[in-house]
Amino acid sequence: MRRWIKALVILFGLIVLYQMVGSFFFIISMIFYGDIESIPGNVNVIGLIFTQLFMLGFVFLIFKDQHVKTYVRFIPIKRHMVFWSFVGGVAILPISTLLIQAMHYIMPSVVDNYIELMDQSLGGANLVITLISVAILAPLVEEVIMRGVLFRQLETATMRPIVIVLLSGLIFGVFHMNIVQGVFTTVAGIIFAVGFLWTRSLWVPIIMHLANNLFAVLIGEIPLNIVESSPFTIVFFVLMLGLPLSLWMIYKQSRYLSSSER
Image (cartoon, rainbow, N blue to C red; front, side, top):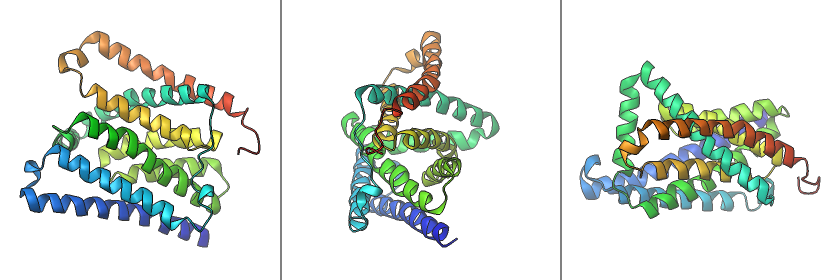
């Protein structure tokens, strides 16, 4: 019981700290620009970048005397596993889209508010700094916290992999502090956790997370008439078939990791 309490305190402490630091930069922006709608997208993204860098530094600082490598396991992986991790990450996006569409039927106003919030936060932001934040730093920072610190803490509290995987995904959803984002990030978090469980390398969930976020940002740059066209829609959802294939290949190739690498 003590291990569970310690694990949850550390995990939710990191989540609260992340939100507090992000809120600090948001409040500073509000002071300068007066209201939410006046804050430029670039300013929001830069604030997010500072938050991400702060959290990454904080995690390494707080665990530096506790064998940080037991929490942050950057075990090298083979090129084939890099490829299949990327494919799996791309394949998650159509699943997330389907989940959002399903939620829109159940609670349309909530989903509409979420979409409006995302447009306000990132709308008009420079593509390069958006990619740095959303497609590079977010996967790195969030996976270090969730599949690094979180996973290790759960391992000290229970030996059941299924419990660790499911809780890892659920807490990842809660971490986003939004019911719409929370649903599809819970699913994504479970998939990331499975990849990490099989390989014990943070590179696998980081690459999956990176591919998912990168694909999402780049699709947002495509003209709406192309995105809504039938051929694009068909190709987009066919991509979902890459998920079971990628997971199978990751599982198959993980057998070749030596016991010393694990």
